Image 1 (cartoon, rainbow, N blue to C red):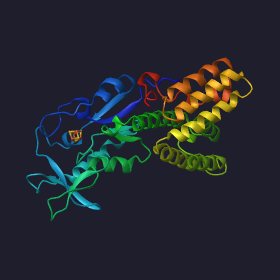
Image 2 (cartoon, rainbow, N blue to C red):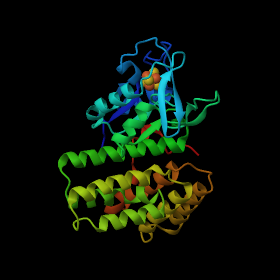
Image 3 (cartoon, rainbow, N blue to C red):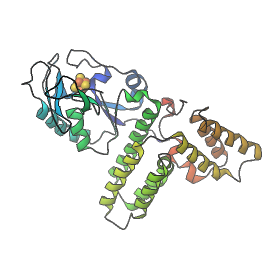
Image 4 (cartoon, protein in one colour):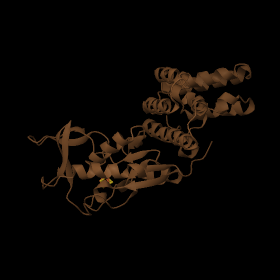
Length: 318
Ligand code: SF4
């Protein structure tokens, strides 16, 4: 597979072990610093330090309603950093144009991507309807950027989903840097077709229709719609059922090449995967082995066969 040694990911600084939290502590995350770090360049950003709040500092909380809330000091509610955090996000947008993903610190009133505590003015009991002020603005400014929180990355399905999206987005950024043409978009989609299929038939059909219109509309417009739709489709995690469908589809390309016992072994391996007895890497490895001996260009070019560094072992969980 193509190596992306300089793939860039924006990240809440405290997740890398930087002591930038309100109390001078950090929230180092082992998966991020030990497993993911060798494959990416992190762009660490602490918005609260960025707006000059200092370390240590007064902690903040979200106060208001789901549609209208402010980031206020926990002890001193006259401290209001809502605008400062949003403006800081605006100032980061150019720097972040080159990142291919963002990992936010969960539950933070600045960085939390979802379910952040939101305190109504009249009651002490918070809901979980808040989004960190900085994270919200970044997601508005860069709506196609793959984003995730460190806590959700402990889930193997969400972890693979995020890393897959980061690598897809990076390949798209590379294409944009070369120049978008209808032929390049079609070639890009063709190589990602089975990844899209693994995220469900509906998304696959919608993307197919969109790609069929390439060349009929303005290239820039369709390219923007293409990437927005693609990233939205990929956001929905691939299910074991959809992966099974893709594996069987790939197996179809070996109909004439395999003898009876090889066919049987492959069918059983895919079935064992479907039943949850084997991780995805097992049928994929067997398929790769067969396509090395019986090359089929369309399959060998599919990103699905090798979507991210195997050393990350993202397809090795049951
Ligand atoms: S969660 Fe965000 S604002 Fe808070 S310490 Fe970490 S990087 Fe800074």
